[in-house]
Length: 342
Ligand code: DON
Image 1 (spheres, rainbow, N blue to C red):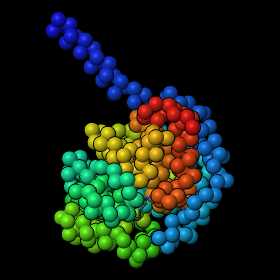
Image 2 (image 1 turned 135 degrees about the vertical axis):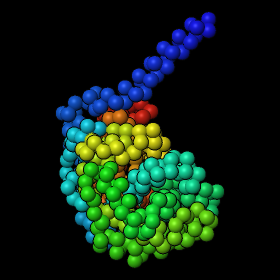
Image 3 (image 1 turned 90 degrees about the horizontal axis):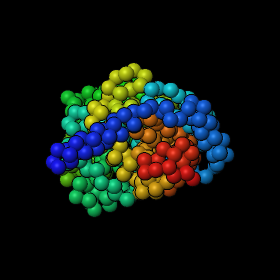
């Protein structure tokens, strides 16, 4: 009896292990190259003429980015690229950088430190909310909102501000498999108007929830958000997460495989701020948005879907990028909770 149930348990565990380890690693093989290129082309064609929303304007220079730009990319976990539209235009990464710096903190201090010193709960509030800092005991709430992202930067183990910035930039570059650079004009524009984030950094410090000098954390965080990427860079960053933390272009391990699920869970719960619920309800995938107009989405074990378009909705999320990715998720049936066509 005991032995039989042990055998059944062994069988069940083996099947589970197979499902968990082998199935998600079955590459994008369940989708042919033609199919991936087709959905990318369709998503681009479908929303190309959509003009809804507007560029972010609280960072003055973002109003000068041509609003009609629109690019869509899938990058597979083995580094194959399927692209349509403006995928070579360099724009500021903004909040899409946040989970990748949280990953660096996880690498240095483990996921428990992220949970305890930042938090992992969704706020249901906008990305720059000050009320959330007062409402929640964690203060910083999670690594996707500005408070949690500034806290993550302050947790990077560094000897100096320069060292902190070098590590943050190198980590983003390692995820992208490309030496990324600061867009100086974006940094100047954002840092000279960063009154809201400066307030957040100082309040967190006052609560003992910021772990470096606040102005240093603010400067490095603002530089992090001002890093230039194109849609293909972002797609490789996402593909690195789809590939269990190994960059498919350089083959460098950037994040321990055992930390990838925690990071993807945070992205799923918080990546769209006060629209995170709706995003899971529709696209059903972990993702992160930025006010530069980029969105990176991860289909674990398979590929990343990225879209870029500068016009945003009220929550600061790119309208065409959301629609394009949601379309692809539905068409390919890759939502985590089951196929969910539009
Ligand atoms: O701190 C900020 O406000 C910007 N650097 C980033 C905000 C952002 O991208 C929000 N995402 N959609």
